[in-house]
Image (cartoon, rainbow, N blue to C red; front, side, top):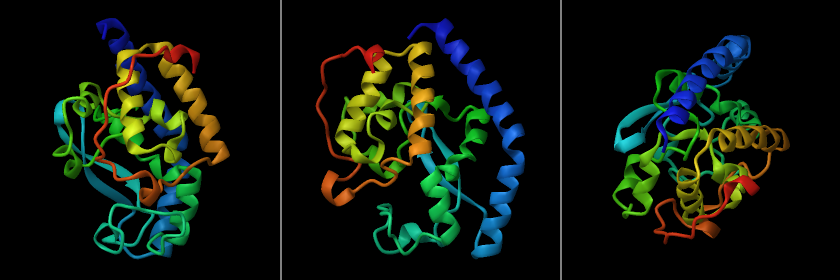
Length: 216
C-alpha cells in the first residue's frame, strides 16, 4: 500500500471519529442510560480482538446481551431470536447502534472506519497464511464483506473479500464502502450470521483471483 493514501486514511479516521463522537454524544448518552435502566450490568461490552499485525486490543460496543452471554448457550454464536439479547439490545442490534462506541476505538487508533472486521483471539490459531493477510491492515467498523452481504456471507467468503480489499485498497474504495454501509444500516439487512448454515468463523479458505473492486 502507498504511504500517502494510508496517511490520509489515518487523518480521516481521527477527525471523522472525533466529529462523530461530538455530534452523537447526546444519542450515546441516551443509549447508555437506557441500557443501565433496563438490565443489570455495565453499559459497554468489552472484548479482546486482534488488530493489525496480531496486536490485541479491547473492542467497545454497547452491551446488548445479558452479562456473561458468551459463556451461556451458543457462546459466540448469536441469532435474531436469541434469548440472551436484552430488549434494548435487540433494537440496538437491528439499527447497528451497538457499534457506535467503536468510534472510540477508531479515535485511539485501534481500528479504522473501513477494513476487515476484527477477529477474536480464539480464531487466530486456525488461520493459515492466506487468512493472516487480514492482519496486514487495521481492522474496520465496516468493510467490503459487509457491503457485499454482511451476515448472509459465509466466513470463508468474508475473508476472501477482506484480502481483496487489501489488494485493491484506495481512498475512493473506502468512500464507496462507507456510502454503501449507510444504506445497508438503514435497510437493516442481514444483521445476524447463521453459524449452522454458513459454518464457523475459522473455516479455512483458499485465495481467489484479484478483482476490480471499483465496479462494486
